[in-house]
Amino acid sequence: MYKGLKISAPFFEIGPKAYLYGENMLSLAKVIDKVAMKYDVDIIVTPQYTDISLLALNTSRILVFAQHMDYLPIGRGLGSVLPEAVKAAGAVGVMLNHAEKPLTMEEIQKTIERADEVGLGTIVCSNTIEQMKQIAKMSPNLIVAEPTELIGTGQTSDISYVKESIETVKQINPEIMVLQGAGIKDGNDVYNVIKAGALATGSTSGIIKAKDPYAMVEEMIYSLRRAWDEIHNK
Picture 1 (cartoon, helix red, strand yellow):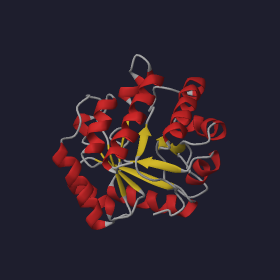
Picture 2: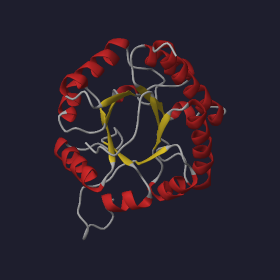
Picture 3: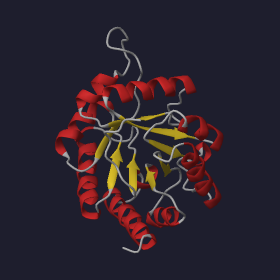
Picture 4: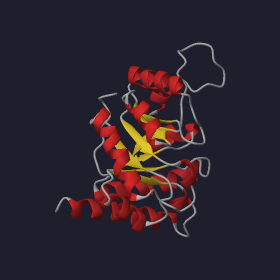
């Protein structure tokens, strides 16, 4: 686990996937940046590789993560994503094992080790509780509990899954924070999952496909902060 990553609960992740790039990505990132400051919430954003520097240089509060990287060393490997290059571009972390970019357990382990080596935080996606146990033993910074069948559906994980995933990871390594992903479509979903005990959540489709993506960012982060503060009596 890379100890240099500064992130605290409640936090949020916005993954533009391949929907946005360039100026459109930057415009959304600037809105996210302002909302992050307004509600004092850490927000991870995972842009296209080619936009990492663009976002890192033009925002101050969001945490820019790469969508993926490889574990190869400096040298040969045309077409690969070099950890040192991700770091130099301005990213502070990397997402691994998303359902759209799956890895083997061995690949996850080696890539986490390379991320630790170059100074990048890691957020690793997990589909099942059993997979979560294996990943937690590798000590990433963050784990996304995200049932693959719910991604992009607008259906969220049930409360029992939320609680079991948090407890499972806590028993193995209490330093790892768990983000509840998949199916978050609006502020109400965000509010409910945080009230259920989650430390964090995130959204792609709910924001990108909203009539007003900028307004949806505000709605979701407001709901995150409100639910968290209600639980902690702030």
